[in-house]
Image (cartoon, rainbow, N blue to C red; front, side, top):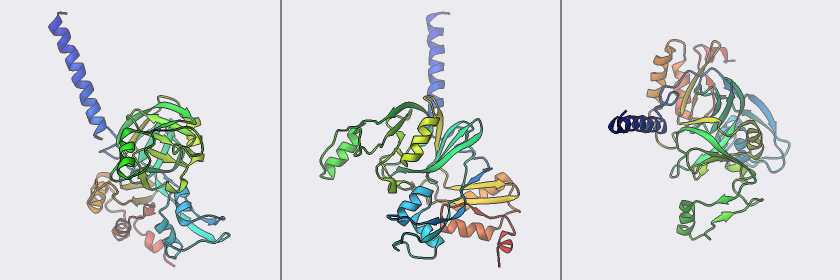
Length: 310
């Protein structure tokens, strides 16, 4: 093989690698722009006894329900103060996105993390994600770093934000009770981002981070034990999900936090066509769910309204 042929082959390999990276980072990889019909719904409807210090925000963060939705489920205003011993009705059902068999799947609008092994869902829990002005990226990744009691080396971009806001600029936070990363850090191959614990548990199930994925200390501790370096994962942006579980059809719709999917009704009709479900769903129920954007999986099988009426 002469020099020019070798250079040409290397150039082709380089071009293919760049194209593959571009496709993945822009979400064109399988499972991002071609969603599959969900087959599983997790969570349940149950009664919760309020403990001392609980609030709608803290309960919602732990179970993956917006505080305003939790208030509506119990027929009172979102600013109501809770009393210890009080019972709350909670519905935290969520559709499991069907996009990966092994590894971690995170759906940004859903603010949920799902961990699979050999096609089985082993763990699922709510997470906190990036602010709309500092969004969590989409794309495939691998776990590159596992670190207990991490040191937080504050990124320059966050230092600059501290300076703009007139705060004391911090460059490094050692392990301990003041470290925003908590006790566990899973560094991603998407540079600078990771899945980590937190010292602000009520911020979970919100868009308040600088792009990282924030989990409850108990949840990240279990996930940390499960995963190894090299574990694959995917971050996607799907505000509308549909699942078929047996003969039941479920719909889950979230608000468009990053303004990426503005027309939920159009997306819904497209998915009905793709999955051949146009004649088995109750469109009136579906439109109500799309309008409310509660982020809870609801059944929309045709006839369910009659079945559930008194």
